Amino acid sequence: MTKSEKKSEKKVKQEIKTHAGDAVCKRCHAVYFGKHWQTSPKLYAEFKARRAAEILCGECRQIQQKDGFGGEVILKNITAAEKTEIIQEIKNIGARASRRDPEDQIIKIEDKGKSVRVTTTENQLAISIGKQVDRAHKGGKLEIKLSKEDKPVRVVWTAK
Ligand SMILES: [Zn+2]
Image (tube, rainbow, N blue to C red; front, side):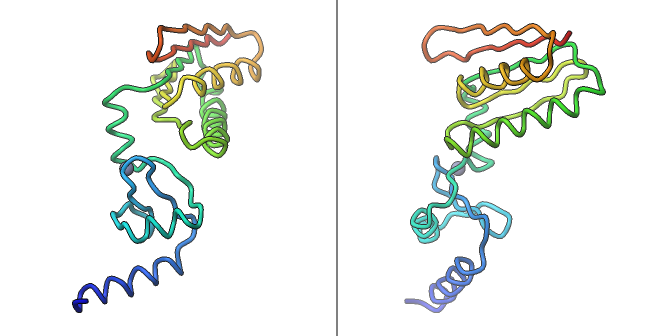
C-alpha cells in the first residue's frame, strides 16, 4: 500500500464514521457524502451494507432527463397563490413515493407561470401526483393520457 492509498483509506474510514444521511446512486454507484457525489467502490460497499438510500445522482438524473422520462404532469390554470402550495404538495408526494420505491422520483418541477410541469421517472408517480392534486383541490379536471408500452404517460390537471 502506497502512502497516498493509506491516506485515502484513513479518509474513507473517517467519512464512514462521520457521515449521516448517506446515499448511493443506483445507476452509476457513486456515493453521496460531504455534500457531493464521489466515486468510491469502497464507500459504495459500506453504504450498501448499511442500507443507505438508493437514489440517482445529479449526473444520472441529467442523463435520464436527456433519455426522456417516465411520466409527465401538466398542471394548468394555477394562480400564483395556489402555486407555492401545489409545488410543495408535489414535492411531498415525490418524497413519499421515493421512500417506498427509490425508482419513483421527480426529475424536475418547472414553474411556467400559470402552469407547472413535472417530470417523473415512472408513469405511476405521474398518475399518483395527478390524482392527489385533484383530490386536494376540488373542482379541477384530471385527464390521464395513457400511451403505448414504455412511452411516457401524460397527466393533465386543470384547476377550476
Ligand atoms: Zn449516478
